[in-house]
Image (cartoon, rainbow, N blue to C red; front, side, top):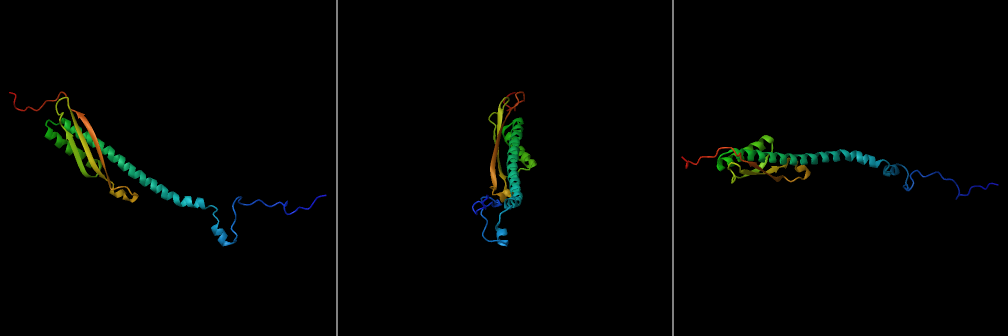
Length: 173
């Protein structure tokens, strides 16, 4: 008493890719348009370019951070050199030359370097303030669309030694 299977109750083999409709054409065109494994191929092709982009971005960021650190160090060196001098003119000159030497020895290329020295407190127990401003050149990183340069500045304040001698103006005998 078994009934023969009807077409609606016939067992069909499961679809290979459920939810996806196969193209009507068969042969090479259907195989060529099938996207089995295409994501893996696209990721394999795109990965080296993404890694190169990340490396370039890392280099640009490192150069900016390194330049900022070097300018900060140059400001501290210039303030220290200015605080050792006896006259305001000598302090300004020492700050300028020390900042330029520190930046050139560190490899920072400045389009323009500005060193501002405040010597109003150049007396025992006072302070000397130096601000170093530099237009850093990023010209070789233009491939990433980075602007050609950026203005960075740093300030430093150094105390003048309390026990140092002062300049004799000649009015005392």
